[in-house]
Amino acid sequence: MTPWRAIADGIAQRAAAAGLDLAHPLNAAWYDDVVEPTWALPDVGRRDALAVLLASSRALWPRFVAALRREPARIESPDPLDDYVGDAVLAAVRPLGERWEVRLAHEPPPRRIAIQRLAHLAGFAFLGSGFLNVHPTFGPWIALRAVVVVDVPGPATRPSLADPCGGCTASCVAARERALAASGGTGEAELRESWRVWLAAREACPVGAAHRYDDAQIRYTYTKDRGVLRALVAS
Image (cartoon, rainbow, N blue to C red; front, side):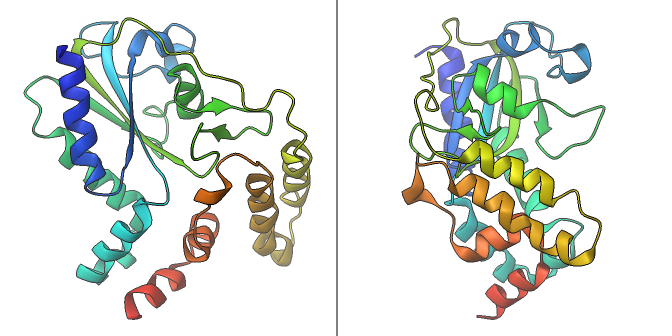
Protein backbone atom coordinates (compact mmCIF):
# COMPACT_ATOMS: atom_id res chain seq x y z
CA MET A 1 0.00 0.00 0.00
CA THR A 2 1.36 3.42 -0.95
CA PRO A 3 1.98 5.90 1.91
CA TRP A 4 -0.75 8.26 0.70
CA ARG A 5 -3.31 5.46 0.55
CA ALA A 6 -2.60 4.28 4.09
CA ILE A 7 -2.85 7.85 5.40
CA ALA A 8 -6.07 8.57 3.47
CA ASP A 9 -7.63 5.33 4.67
CA GLY A 10 -6.77 6.13 8.29
CA ILE A 11 -8.32 9.60 8.03
CA ALA A 12 -11.42 8.11 6.39
CA GLN A 13 -11.90 5.49 9.10
CA ARG A 14 -11.59 7.96 11.95
CA ALA A 15 -13.84 10.52 10.27
CA ALA A 16 -16.52 7.90 9.51
CA ALA A 17 -16.87 7.15 13.22
CA ALA A 18 -18.27 10.67 13.64
CA GLY A 19 -20.55 10.45 10.60
CA LEU A 20 -18.23 11.94 8.00
CA ASP A 21 -18.72 8.80 5.99
CA LEU A 22 -17.43 9.91 2.59
CA ALA A 23 -13.71 10.50 1.99
CA HIS A 24 -11.91 10.95 -1.30
CA PRO A 25 -8.14 11.37 -1.87
CA LEU A 26 -6.71 13.70 -4.51
CA ASN A 27 -3.51 15.42 -5.51
CA ALA A 28 -3.53 19.05 -4.35
CA ALA A 29 -2.06 20.15 -7.68
CA TRP A 30 -5.18 18.99 -9.55
CA TYR A 31 -7.06 21.77 -7.80
CA ASP A 32 -4.38 24.41 -7.18
CA ASP A 33 -3.32 24.47 -10.83
CA VAL A 34 -6.74 25.70 -11.99
CA VAL A 35 -7.88 28.12 -9.26
CA GLU A 36 -6.79 31.62 -8.35
CA PRO A 37 -4.14 31.77 -5.59
CA THR A 38 -6.68 33.22 -3.15
CA TRP A 39 -8.64 29.95 -3.38
CA ALA A 40 -5.63 27.63 -3.14
CA LEU A 41 -5.19 24.82 -0.64
CA PRO A 42 -2.77 25.41 2.25
CA ASP A 43 0.91 24.95 1.45
CA VAL A 44 2.52 22.08 3.34
CA GLY A 45 5.80 22.22 1.47
CA ARG A 46 5.01 20.31 -1.74
CA ARG A 47 2.74 21.11 -4.66
CA ASP A 48 1.80 17.44 -5.19
CA ALA A 49 0.61 16.93 -1.60
CA LEU A 50 -2.05 14.45 -0.63
CA ALA A 51 -5.41 16.08 -0.02
CA VAL A 52 -8.41 14.25 1.40
CA LEU A 53 -11.90 15.60 0.81
CA LEU A 54 -14.24 14.77 3.69
CA ALA A 55 -17.97 14.78 3.07
CA SER A 56 -21.10 13.28 4.53
CA SER A 57 -24.33 11.65 3.49
CA ARG A 58 -27.35 11.55 5.78
CA ALA A 59 -25.24 9.25 8.00
CA LEU A 60 -23.88 12.35 9.74
CA TRP A 61 -27.22 13.38 11.20
CA PRO A 62 -27.78 10.61 13.82
CA ARG A 63 -24.20 10.99 15.07
CA PHE A 64 -24.66 14.73 15.38
CA VAL A 65 -27.97 14.34 17.23
CA ALA A 66 -26.40 11.77 19.57
CA ALA A 67 -23.61 14.27 20.36
CA LEU A 68 -26.22 16.93 21.18
CA ARG A 69 -28.01 14.55 23.52
CA ARG A 70 -24.74 13.87 25.33
CA GLU A 71 -23.91 17.57 25.48
CA PRO A 72 -27.07 19.68 25.09
CA ALA A 73 -25.08 22.87 25.64
CA ARG A 74 -23.74 22.41 22.09
CA ILE A 75 -27.10 23.68 20.80
CA GLU A 76 -26.23 27.18 21.99
CA SER A 77 -22.86 27.34 20.20
CA PRO A 78 -22.55 29.78 17.25
CA ASP A 79 -23.22 26.98 14.75
CA PRO A 80 -23.78 23.59 16.38
CA LEU A 81 -23.34 21.49 13.23
CA ASP A 82 -20.28 23.33 11.92
CA ASP A 83 -18.70 23.12 15.37
CA TYR A 84 -19.39 19.38 15.55
CA VAL A 85 -17.89 18.85 12.10
CA GLY A 86 -14.81 20.87 12.99
CA ASP A 87 -14.23 18.78 16.10
CA ALA A 88 -14.70 15.55 14.12
CA VAL A 89 -12.25 16.58 11.40
CA LEU A 90 -9.56 17.55 13.90
CA ALA A 91 -10.03 14.26 15.76
CA ALA A 92 -9.48 12.42 12.47
CA VAL A 93 -6.19 14.17 11.65
CA ARG A 94 -4.52 14.67 15.03
CA PRO A 95 -3.04 11.12 15.06
CA LEU A 96 -1.06 11.84 11.87
CA GLY A 97 2.70 11.91 12.20
CA GLU A 98 3.09 14.02 9.06
CA ARG A 99 2.55 17.75 8.77
CA TRP A 100 -1.05 18.57 7.94
CA GLU A 101 -3.41 21.49 7.43
CA VAL A 102 -7.22 21.58 7.40
CA ARG A 103 -9.69 23.81 5.59
CA LEU A 104 -13.35 23.56 6.61
CA ALA A 105 -15.99 24.23 3.98
CA HIS A 106 -17.64 26.96 6.05
CA GLU A 107 -14.49 28.99 6.72
CA PRO A 108 -14.52 32.56 5.37
CA PRO A 109 -11.69 34.29 3.45
CA PRO A 110 -8.72 34.14 3.54
CA ARG A 111 -9.11 30.43 4.39
CA ARG A 112 -11.95 29.67 2.02
CA ILE A 113 -11.65 27.12 -0.77
CA ALA A 114 -13.86 26.41 -3.76
CA ILE A 115 -14.93 23.09 -2.34
CA GLN A 116 -17.60 22.35 -4.94
CA ARG A 117 -15.05 22.78 -7.70
CA LEU A 118 -12.53 20.71 -5.76
CA ALA A 119 -15.03 17.84 -5.42
CA HIS A 120 -15.55 17.92 -9.18
CA LEU A 121 -11.83 18.08 -10.05
CA ALA A 122 -11.07 15.26 -7.60
CA GLY A 123 -13.53 12.95 -9.35
CA PHE A 124 -15.78 12.73 -6.30
CA ALA A 125 -19.04 14.43 -7.31
CA PHE A 126 -19.85 16.06 -10.64
CA LEU A 127 -20.68 19.77 -10.52
CA GLY A 128 -23.84 19.69 -12.57
CA SER A 129 -26.03 22.09 -14.50
CA GLY A 130 -28.09 22.99 -11.44
CA PHE A 131 -24.90 24.00 -9.58
CA LEU A 132 -25.16 21.01 -7.27
CA ASN A 133 -22.44 18.40 -6.85
CA VAL A 134 -23.95 15.06 -7.85
CA HIS A 135 -22.34 11.96 -6.34
CA PRO A 136 -22.67 8.74 -8.39
CA THR A 137 -24.45 6.97 -5.49
CA PHE A 138 -25.86 9.67 -3.23
CA GLY A 139 -26.71 12.24 -5.88
CA PRO A 140 -26.98 15.76 -4.42
CA TRP A 141 -27.72 14.39 -0.94
CA ILE A 142 -24.21 15.02 0.31
CA ALA A 143 -22.48 17.82 2.18
CA LEU A 144 -18.88 18.78 1.42
CA ARG A 145 -17.33 19.38 4.82
CA ALA A 146 -13.54 19.79 4.75
CA VAL A 147 -10.26 19.17 3.01
CA VAL A 148 -7.16 17.84 4.78
CA VAL A 149 -3.76 18.46 3.15
CA VAL A 150 -0.89 16.18 4.23
CA ASP A 151 2.84 16.52 3.54
CA VAL A 152 3.24 13.34 1.46
CA PRO A 153 2.93 12.91 -2.31
CA GLY A 154 -0.68 12.38 -3.34
CA PRO A 155 -2.13 10.10 -6.04
CA ALA A 156 -0.64 10.43 -9.50
CA THR A 157 -3.69 9.45 -11.58
CA ARG A 158 -6.90 11.44 -11.55
CA PRO A 159 -10.06 9.28 -11.66
CA SER A 160 -12.62 9.83 -14.38
CA LEU A 161 -16.02 11.17 -13.49
CA ALA A 162 -19.11 10.56 -15.61
CA ASP A 163 -21.46 13.46 -16.30
CA PRO A 164 -24.81 12.51 -14.71
CA CYS A 165 -26.51 15.49 -16.31
CA GLY A 166 -25.90 14.57 -19.96
CA GLY A 167 -29.25 13.80 -21.51
CA CYS A 168 -31.07 14.25 -18.21
CA THR A 169 -34.54 15.80 -18.59
CA ALA A 170 -35.05 16.62 -14.90
CA SER A 171 -35.94 20.20 -14.07
CA CYS A 172 -33.12 21.06 -11.64
CA VAL A 173 -31.93 24.06 -13.66
CA ALA A 174 -35.42 25.55 -13.83
CA ALA A 175 -35.91 24.83 -10.13
CA ARG A 176 -32.67 26.63 -9.33
CA GLU A 177 -33.78 29.68 -11.34
CA ARG A 178 -37.02 29.75 -9.36
CA ALA A 179 -35.03 29.54 -6.14
CA LEU A 180 -32.82 32.46 -7.16
CA ALA A 181 -35.88 34.52 -8.02
CA ALA A 182 -37.58 33.70 -4.72
CA SER A 183 -34.48 34.63 -2.75
CA GLY A 184 -34.49 38.08 -4.29
CA GLY A 185 -37.47 39.21 -2.22
CA THR A 186 -37.02 41.35 0.86
CA GLY A 187 -40.18 40.56 2.80
CA GLU A 188 -39.99 38.34 5.88
CA ALA A 189 -42.42 35.80 4.46
CA GLU A 190 -40.37 35.46 1.28
CA LEU A 191 -37.15 34.98 3.22
CA ARG A 192 -38.76 32.48 5.59
CA GLU A 193 -40.17 30.35 2.80
CA SER A 194 -37.42 30.59 0.17
CA TRP A 195 -35.61 27.53 1.57
CA ARG A 196 -38.40 25.36 0.20
CA VAL A 197 -37.64 26.34 -3.39
CA TRP A 198 -33.94 25.65 -2.83
CA LEU A 199 -34.95 22.23 -1.53
CA ALA A 200 -37.06 21.71 -4.65
CA ALA A 201 -33.96 22.31 -6.79
CA ARG A 202 -32.17 19.53 -4.93
CA GLU A 203 -35.14 17.18 -5.06
CA ALA A 204 -35.41 17.68 -8.82
CA CYS A 205 -32.24 15.62 -9.36
CA PRO A 206 -33.17 11.96 -9.95
CA VAL A 207 -29.77 10.59 -8.88
CA GLY A 208 -29.59 9.24 -5.33
CA ALA A 209 -33.20 9.99 -4.45
CA ALA A 210 -33.25 7.05 -2.03
CA HIS A 211 -30.60 8.86 0.04
CA ARG A 212 -32.68 12.00 0.66
CA TYR A 213 -32.22 13.51 4.12
CA ASP A 214 -35.03 13.07 6.63
CA ASP A 215 -37.34 16.01 7.31
CA ALA A 216 -35.58 17.21 10.48
CA GLN A 217 -32.18 17.21 8.79
CA ILE A 218 -33.58 19.04 5.78
CA ARG A 219 -35.26 21.71 7.86
CA TYR A 220 -32.17 22.36 9.94
CA THR A 221 -29.86 22.30 6.90
CA TYR A 222 -31.84 25.01 5.17
CA THR A 223 -33.07 27.12 8.08
CA LYS A 224 -30.55 26.61 10.95
CA ASP A 225 -33.61 26.53 13.22
CA ARG A 226 -32.33 25.50 16.66
CA GLY A 227 -35.87 24.54 17.60
CA VAL A 228 -35.39 21.48 15.40
CA LEU A 229 -32.37 20.46 17.48
CA ARG A 230 -34.08 21.14 20.81
CA ALA A 231 -37.03 18.99 19.80
CA LEU A 232 -34.75 16.12 18.81
CA VAL A 233 -32.77 16.31 22.05
CA ALA A 234 -35.97 16.36 24.09
CA SER A 235 -37.53 13.41 22.26
